[in-house]
Length: 246
Image 1 (cartoon, rainbow, N blue to C red):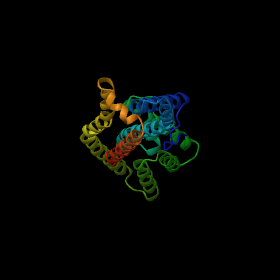
Image 2: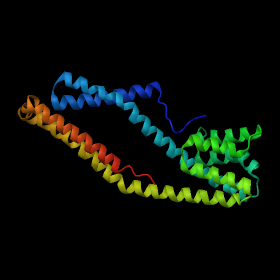
Image 3: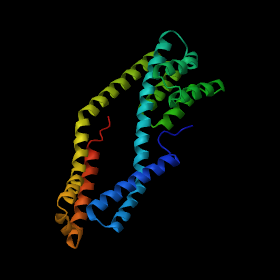
Image 4: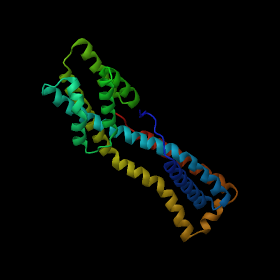
C-alpha cells in the first residue's frame, strides 16, 4: 500500500524537474554574469528541482486525501445514522464516496476497499484504520482511528464520534482556506519582487549594456554573487513566512 508521507517521482517528472531547474539556473546566471562557464555551473542547480517538485506534489496529494477523507466521514456518519452496522456501512461506503468526490481512481477509495477486504479476511477494522492512519501521515486520520478503536472497545457512541470528527475536519479546512485566500496576494507580490531584479537587469542589457560591463569583471563579480545570494535568502525566508499550516 502507498505510504503517503513519501512521494516517488516518475522518470519523466524527475527529468522535467531537472530540465526546468537547469534552464532557470543557466538563464539567470547568463543574464547576470554573461559568462558561459558560470552559466553552465549554475545549471547544476537543476539537480535540486526534483526535491522541490516532490515536496509540492506530496503536499497536494495529502491535501486531496484530507478533503476526500472528510467526505468519507460524512457518508459514513449518514450510513451509521440510518441504522447500518459498521461492517455493513463499510461494505457500501466505497460506492457512496465515489459518487461524492467524482473520482473513481481516488486514493481514499482504494484504502476503503483495502480495509473492507482485510475485515472480510478476518482482521478487525481497527487494524486496517490504524495502518491507513500510519501511512497517511494525517493528524485527522490518526485521531479518528484512535477514537474508533476506543469506541469499539469501550462501547462509545460511534455515530457521534464520526459526526464530530467530520465537523472538526471541516472547520479546520475552512480556516486553512481563509488563510490561503488572505495570503494569496502576498504570495503573488513576493514572486513579483523576486522577479523584478532579473527584469531590471534584462532591461539594462537591452537599453544600456555599458552599465552592466563594470559588474562583469573584477569586484563586480563579487557584488553580483553577494546580491544573488541575498536574493535567494530573502526568497527562502518569505516562503517560510507564508507557509502557514493549521
